[in-house]
Structure formats: structure tokens, C-alpha cells
Image 1 (tube, rainbow, N blue to C red):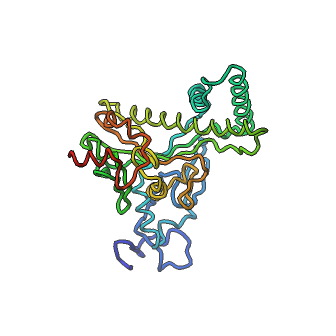
Image 2 (cartoon, rainbow, N blue to C red):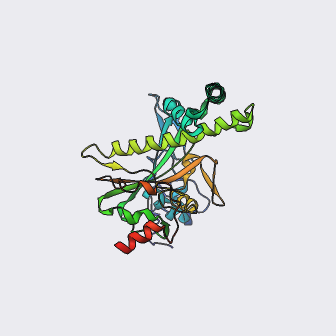
Image 3 (cartoon, one colour):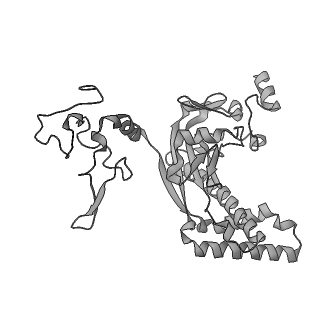
Length: 315
């Protein structure tokens, strides 16, 4: 590895080695100044000190990450990452969430007495839980942009990882400018603390409603973000079990984006916490899904549904 593109030493430097090390011969000078310094969440474990003006300064004096030869690939991978997180307070969306809960629970079909019983149980169980665990108000959403070239005729292609999605056969891919992978989870209630089965039901209903409302908020956020200079559209979210994507895509999506920043992990193809979502949005110059409403609930299979099969034949 010596004097290769991955490893370089400058023993003539007056500061060599610039960190105290036991083995100077393995000290890599390739990244003389840390290229990750401006990243608050880097690969190392920096210390933070306060300046005389009260500002936080990153102190990497004791960090050896970029000077270890075996870290070359991880440093480059970190530099290539363009993902970011946004955080929302779900209580700001409480009116939308209550409306969605009412739809899920079919309150409009209940008799008056039963309606007031269920509405009261829903409001009391959720507000009591949120007041007890105030940190649950905030939901972190991870977003990872990807190039339009990743959208193929019947799949999303991320390097060697291919995620089949049959609805892509129906859309005009020339209108797509880019896309985003996303991941977030609903407030992770300790549902077992609920006083009754009805309360547990409405805590879970609240979680589902939160996911629906936050997913729509992200869609609007991305549409606004890309419409500063010219109008752009953000599609409905693609994901495992809808818009023609197989349920097995969960593990593939988490491999591509690593949703740990959103507090999510994947174990044996199952997301943890259970009330979690991963998926994709597409940014386009026109509404590419206007004719695909019948595909919203499609669980997707590689052989395609009857419509997709006929669509391919007609093409």
C-alpha cells in the first residue's frame, strides 16, 4: 500500500506525525487536513470546546480516523453522501392527524353515543401519552437524493441493488429530474402503558395517521424545494406494498440508504420500530402519476399485474 493512491507519507513534514501514534510507519498523510471537519456527524469522535465568544469549535486533536490506512474507502463513502434530515413536530399537524384518524376508525359511520365514546378515548389516550413522553412530538425524516438515471423501465437501480417497481412501465421517465429515498417512523409509543384495549387501538391509529400526514408533508416540502425557479412536481411516495413495489423491497431500501439517522433499523426484512416507513419520491416537470391512481395499492410482483401485462403488449 505504501505510496499508493490510498496511502502516502511525508516524513519530511515538520509535524509528522501530527497525532501521537504508537506506529508512525502506518500513519497515512493522504488526508492531511480532515475532509470531514465541517460535518457535525463525521466518522470520528471529536471533542467540542467553547470559544471566548461562546461558539462551539470542533477539536479533532485526538482523532486518528482519516490517518488510518484501512479507513480510505469509508472516508470517500462519507464524502459522497448527500443525505440530510429534516425534523417536524407532529403536534403542529394535529388537526390533519385527527381527521385522518376519523377516516381510519370510520367515525362518520358510528352512532352518536359510540362516536363520542371513541372520540373521547382517542383524544385522552393520545394527549396523555404525548404529555408523559414529550420527546415523542418530534419526528426525524431522513432524505437521500438520487439521480434520475436510477429510474429504469421497471425498476430502481442503485449500483448492484435493483428494486422492481411495475408502475414505472406506465410513467414518462423523461419528465423525471431526480428522486429521493426517505425513512422515518411514527412516535414510538409504549402502547402497553395504555389503560384499555380501546386506548391501545387509538394510540396505534394515531401512529398510522402520523405516518400518512408526515408522508404528505414531505411530498409538499420536496415540491416547494424544487419549485423555486420553475414549477416541479413531487410524486406520491413509492414504497414496499404500494405503487407496484414488492414487500421484499424493504431490506433493499434500507441497504441503499441506511436509515439509522432516522432511528430505524431492519432485522430479517422487518423495520424497527414497527411503525416505520421507507420509500422513494420522484421529482418531475409534470405530474407523472396522474393516470396511475389504480396502482396506488398495488403490492407489485415481478411478473406484473394484468394491466401491466396488457400495457407491455400494447407498447
